[in-house]
Amino acid sequence: QKEVEQNSGPLSVPEGAIASLNCTYSDRGSQSFFWYRQYSGKSPELIMSIYSNGDKEDGRFTAQLNKASQYVSLLIRDSQPSDSATYLCAVNSDTGNQFYFGTGTSLTVIP
Amino acid sequence: AAGVIQSPRHLIKEKRETATLKCYPIPRHDTVYWYQQGPGQDPQFLISFYEKMQSDKGSIPDRFSAQQFSDYHSELNMSSLELGDSALYFCASSLTGNEQFFGPGTRLTVL
Image (cartoon, rainbow over all chains, first blue to last red; front, side, top):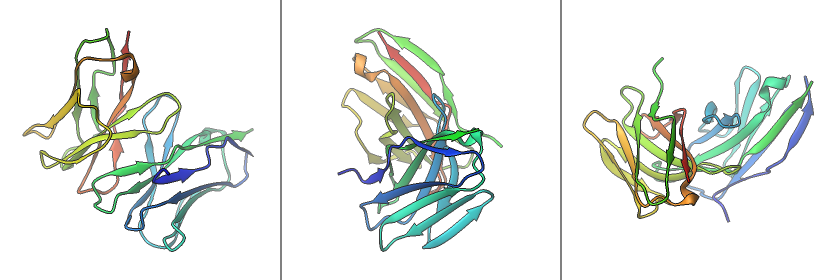
C-alpha cells in the first residue's frame, strides 16, 4: 500500500464547474500536506499547503484536511482550461524529512 | 524571486556511462531533495540533505550517490547508467522541511 493514495482519473469537468480532487494517506504522524500541479514534462508547482484540520482558501482553490479520517482534498472553483494538469497530493513523513507523493489525478477542463 | 536551478536541462548518455546532475537551491533554503520521475509516474524520492548532511534516503540505487557542498548546491552522481535510468530528475529545496519548491528538472536519456 502506498503512503498516499489518489484517484488517477482522468477527471473531466466543464469550464466554470467545481473540480474536486481527493487524497488519503496512511501515516498518522504526518503534519504537513501539499497540493502540487504538474503540466506534462514540467516540474511540480506548489499551489496549496495545509497543516491543520479544516479548510484553507486561496483564490479559486480550497484545501480541506481531516486528520482523523486521514483525508485531504482540493477544490477548484470556476475551473478554467488552464487548470488542466496532473494534481499531486504530497504528505510529509512523521520525521518531516521526506515527502510522499500520490500518483496524481489528471484533470481536464473542457471549454 | 529566485528559484531552484538545475543543470543540465537535458542529458544524453550511453549505457554504463556516468552522469552528474547539479542543483542550486533557493537562497537561504537549508534542505535539498532529489526525485526521479519516470513517464506517467509520480516523483520518487531519492535522497535529501539538511545543512549539508544527508538527512533521509529513499529509493536511490547503490549506483547513485549525492552530496551537498558548502555553498549548499548539490550534485547527484549516477554511474553504470542503465536504460531504466532514463527519467526526469528533479531537485527541490525547502526551508527546514516546509514547502518544497521544485527546479525545472533534468531530462536524462540513456541510450
